[in-house]
Image (tube, rainbow, N blue to C red):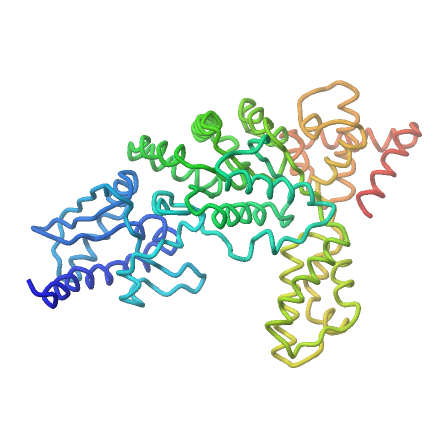
Length: 484
């Protein structure tokens, strides 16, 4: 067969598959496409059988059962009457077909060269080396590196710990604090640090197998493996990594079967001296619905709290982001006092802060105005209104627990001892007077209590404030701290 004949034969195989991929991409969405379809290599169709190479049996079986009917329909539409699909596990790593992972990605049919290129798959950007396609992980954000992380007092310990873990894994081992557990509120940098660790490890040691995903994705893959009897492939996938990173682990609370598998995966990786990094919105002991044995293991290593940002840290973040914006919009002028104003007024979380800055620069570049205080207040009126100081129940629980030297879990527990019950009543009183939450909502947040319990607590503290000077002083001090 001449080279020209070979080329035309390959084109006859590749072109229908490119169009089938495009059709599937539009039907199942970018994330599913990147996780399940992109690692496949189409080997051709013969006697009504479409043949594929897959990196693992788990992926092949999942695609067969989930997208098999859709694939057969799309092949028939392209003139290939495929009635059966066959997935063989490749003996060597299968080169993935490239798809641009940006939010505005074009479909796989946008470039025939991209469809046949054996480039590493960006869909598994958290993995590295030749084993990339074995781990259908979540994509990493290229902006979330250590270089782009602004360090201040509220997050310096978390940053130092994350950096040390990245160095340890990159050198082929673990650190003394394994697992590393990062927790804090929304927009304080947990996910940024996790992405930064993965990028650092990938840069220092491209052969390291790093798997980063959310707890929800872990649960989804576990349920799918259970449903299609592919638990062996699931276990093999999650227990063969050098570093497992699970974001927002609080989402597996109350999911007994998922917690069981997470527990065994955790133990298997620790026994192999592989690094585990976990994040959540609360400390391990404060996550309701999480098994005690998992809470215990999550506290084996180092538990780090990312505290709410202070004024100096917010100002540092704004200045760093503004410098990057000025490089992209060199004609924009920023007046004095704007960054300080934003750092003072927007204290909820860093994402809101960055969004406000993005809007300011977009507005200024489009209308050709200087970013001054008047324009800032006009452009960000809705954000500034929404960012007025709002006290949350989580803040109240934390402040009350600190004030009375208790744990938040004590306030949420069923304990009725006076040294716990009275602070709990104070917290309920503050939740009722400082937030807009309803009585049933407050009761649910306090360990699933009834609204009548909240009413009793509020009335009790109102009564004690007039007769007990210590209670009156505690309530006033806590109120001032929360409203500051």
